[in-house]
Image (cartoon, rainbow, N blue to C red; front, side, top):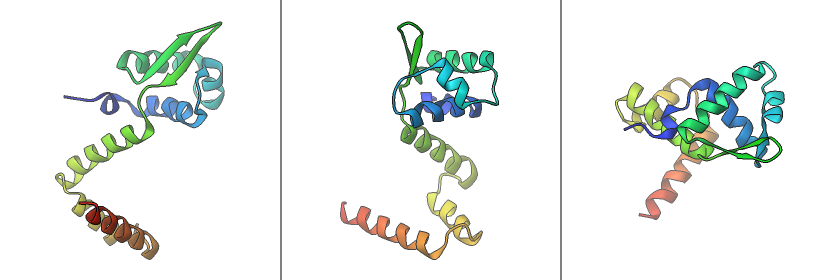
Length: 124
């Protein structure tokens, strides 16, 4: 079963980023301004789809105000899991190994990961 987070498209994700960054309800005008490369009709369509998916709520005042109903962390977590499942057969270890082998992690990143893993193992 797909969650709301898994159903958000890349174009819709741009709208979600605007809402998350704002940290408060936004009007269509604010969102259109932040997404200057998209026209108003496209932005309205994306918002309508996000509302239908349950990712965004809307409140009618003088104009509609939009609020995210899913967090950035929920979407990131869902997308990360999907990426790991698809590209690394569900193995986070294989993904991290690929990042190390491709020189995507420097020594500081590796030290931070070690500290995080140590912290997590102490909590178990």
